[in-house]
Image 1 (tube, helix red, strand yellow):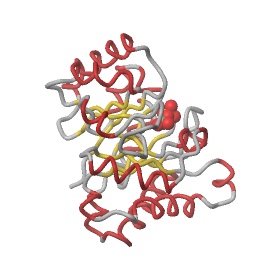
Image 2: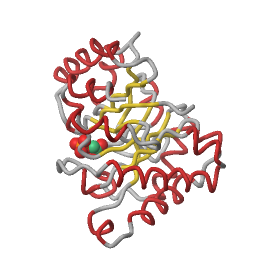
Image 3: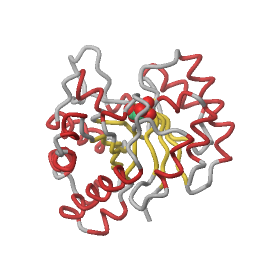
Length: 251
Ligand code: PGA
């Protein structure tokens, strides 16, 4: 049985004190979330050390939003997987469209980063998704398949146990435009098929696939009701504890 997960991606928001307050509010309400729904918070690197103390003993797990593509050494400004691990991180997001778009993140780099993260014992939330031009050109299935194949086909069925896929149509991120439940479901089902082609039906069935892109309390229920949507990667709405928790209660 695959896990249901709601993950908050705080992006470059909140100061450390604000982040601590936000996480305290999430932790305080986390027992209102059904036991079978996992909660993850992906915070800025500067926050992780403090936040890991705040969530101790709660069901909330901690994620980074990115990691370096090298183990250690002369890479000024980068944060390694072992550094993340050492502050209590259990996950890292990789390949978010904002990193692909603004910071030149390529599928090749994502293979390296995924390898290092898994070796360090971190789980990976790998983001895929098409932009507006690609959707309008009818290429959304191909774009998502290519991103999945280029990265995940380098890994094993065993590795897939530590990997979550997040489908985030770029045109829906932070825009208020959500993919309809049908649009999201058809891509999720497609992604599961692409995973099944390489890893077999069981691994594909067991892989958690999240939807991201203007997911909020008002639309989460319909999205999460779809057969292949196993939860959400939440940006804007994760910055309000009540909204984040309400989304996690939407199953
Ligand atoms: P959004 O962001 O919920 O603000 O659209 C989602 C994401 O980018 O992970």
